[in-house]
Length: 103
Image (cartoon, rainbow, N blue to C red):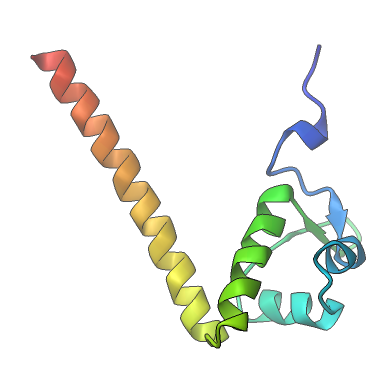
């Protein structure tokens, strides 16, 4: 059986309005996150924002940080650092696996 789009956490399935309703935030807030490059949802062929489950999780994370008083600039930097950290951890894991194979 083939995987369905909703099985993929990166599939852009949700509209701006759906996400705003799900997370109980204003649509303008989601637009502002996009304008400040905090989150960059996919676009439909008509140019409308489409959010994946992964995007929605990030918006929840961003909203928690904003509720704690962080600025969008600070939040964007934190997200960048979190991505870098995840990549470094992935590389470290691969290096450790190669070392084990060589032993």
